[in-house]
Image 1 (cartoon, rainbow, N blue to C red):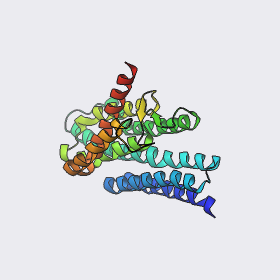
Image 2: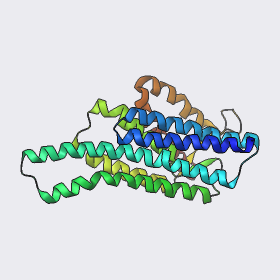
Image 3: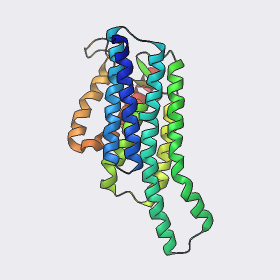
Length: 244
């Protein structure tokens, strides 16, 4: 019986991702983000339960990646798609007030679908992770849960504050391309895995954790985007320091 527990938790991750996709498509961004967060919690506990119960298996590893593609790849892509589709609609209305260029209209009508490039690169990242034996105490490239939380937080936490408009479409597109690159990049990034709880050897991890709480208090759900950006900065800075 116990051998099925981790896979059952992984399936809960998958279901959370499916729910997030539905919420995202209908424009319920906050609910989609909470479903992604729930998926991240299940993703954390399925691996932990497998190790504690001593029932790790190849099928569990593959199932975990399949669930992660949906929760941390398709779901944030669907959120970005819906946002870009809404902004695209606003853009078309603005164009119609003047002289609507048919070519520009066709191009922009399909632009939101480019958001699903992020789902494809998330799948590539997860396939690469399964084959890469270097990622035991850290990551190579941006983890898919971090990328998903960044986009969910950006759309939910900062959308109402900065009043997303059609003018921000190019910025969103560039950020999406940057996410795709980071997912499959060779940039070493630290993981919150502790061999010991002391300061020595864990300086970067403790500094990172110490800054998370104040950011969450100050910015609420929008802090997740800042925290992921801070995580990237610390990882890159650590890499450069280690190379010297």
